[in-house]
Amino acid sequence: NTLGDADEIFQSDNVSAALSHEGYKVLQVGCDPKHDSIATLCGRLLPTILETVREKGLSQESIDSVIFKGYNGTLGCESGGPRPATGCAGKGVYAALEFLTRYKVPERYGANVVIYDVLGDVVCGGFSQPMRHGYAKEIYMVGNGESLTLWQVNNVLKAVVRLRAGGSDVAVGGIIDNMRGVPNEEKVVEAFAEAIGVPVIIHIPRDKTVQQAEFQGKTVIEAFPDSKQAEVYRELAKRIMANTKVYIPKLVTLPDIMRIVKGEMVTAANR
Image (cartoon, rainbow, N blue to C red; front, side, top):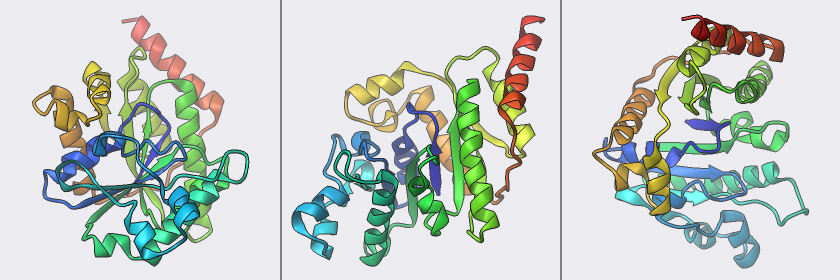
């Protein structure tokens, strides 16, 4: 699975943590040069694959040294990226994924679920590499009801359509609405989802427990296991694993998105 993140606040590690309680052995791969994907899963920022390979050389030992054990038996690693101003970050991500495959990391560590937490930016073609090369076949797009975020989601979906047409085995499992408090947000996102022909898998409410857990260096699942927000993440994890359908999205234009947002907001204002 890939969680394509067009919304910076969403934490994929809450999904990994929830899946671990369902009995899955999860490997979460952070595909972003910021290398913060597994920070709350493992309690801190950790060395990346690419910086370790630069320092120690490429070997099974160097790769194993950056596979970290996280909360409740989860596993995590960060791809990292090239030195600033020296290369393409997306291509660096692809190189890291190749190293994980070469040394059979998921197989050797017994992972039966691999989550690629991918930056929602396919203007750089490098970030489409996990989809292009078959690492991720089932994509979940994270967005919210803001018009420009929906446009970014649509741009990522353009990459899915283009890669699919080129022979890549990739499709979309659903939209995750990571809510920002936009007026009538659920209906806006549902209307967008209907327009592109991809269902909303869940609406995640904005909640202070996310930031509070992050301040502790923990997932919500670990820090506030009895909270309503933790239950939402558990439900999302269950829905992802139970999903049996994938979709080839239809594409919309920015004016289409503006009409969707404006139309839903006008409807809300008239009630």
